[in-house]
Image (cartoon, rainbow, N blue to C red; front, side, top):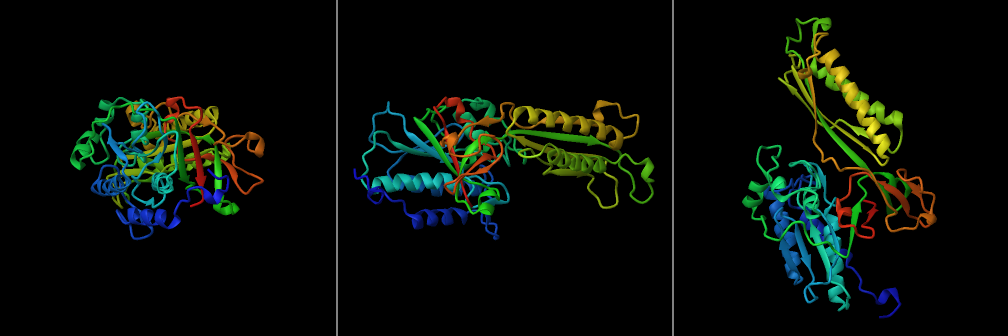
Length: 396
């Protein structure tokens, strides 16, 4: 083949964008975003659309027991492992049209470009989308890739109950994506994921691409505080056992803790539920989530210890009175899998190319790119023990 780059297969920007736009119409929120929670009717419609494109290219499509879909070029010896590109097409309620979708449809575009050009390959190309990678309906997130890589048993995964009270297994059967391909799935020869950054760094610096230098470890905790429900007008402030106030204090502490530790530590209280949730009633119960992330495991663990300790102190002092030594006054529950530990890598780029050896902080590269940590978590595919699964971020 010619060394001239123009002689190589050329991807079609217009074709890729047309597919992205068509997929974005499913679950369109009207403000440029998408809502396709995992295994909903909208997710089924998105799956059907993408699977149709895979079949149009003559790819061999398989669906496994957790609903992961893998499409592989045919015509190769079955012993030859493919080079795989993949991501997800489920979203959160306020999801973007490129998050995950770009990684799937970009892989599909590469396959179509290679086939159109008649490119002869030593290995087949494959593209995959994994089930419930967002985790917005069924926790934990990245569930499909976790099952594919052997990190969770299929029966355990199918029994997970979602935020609306239904199980993964029931919903897979309902939408017709309870497949028969075995789990764990077959490890590819290599895996790459192209992903929109979902953050402001690349755009703010005028850069278009970044090599991932580290993966944030993620800790999710659910905190439940028990107080006492009373009238908002007749109960003196000094006599309140206000679970809502305790929840807001924890939220302020989490933000302050992240600022005190400094980058790349981040902390978020993204969900608070109050009971009875009335304008004129002191809350008797508060339930909130705490999301902590850092590329440094020691710092992440330290932040978690501080956050849990503060939650207990706050719940006892403010959720109830001094008698609240009863552990029932505050409960914490881990809601994310225990192997979410920080990881480090060079994203396929040499460490000598730039000043980003301090993994966990982003740094500019001299060739208009960047090294930066991955903030949203990466498929748990290191279990395949590939030489180096690759992920790159592009500006959204």
